[in-house]
Image 1: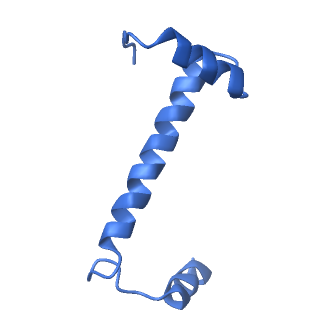
Image 2 (image 1 turned 45 degrees about the vertical axis):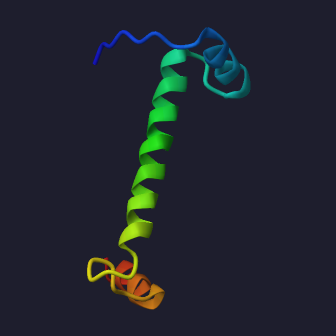
Length: 67
């Protein structure tokens, strides 16, 4: 998907410098993937203890073993 975004040049430069990514596209893709993962983890934490996720660690391990 093509999108035009006005980003702070210094922020992009720092991200490129610190990241193993070689292109702006790689930096942005990685950043979006990490952001989505963070949001999903937060959602999972909020649901912990509700009926949605009312299982123990052992239950989860058993489910994984059954796959």
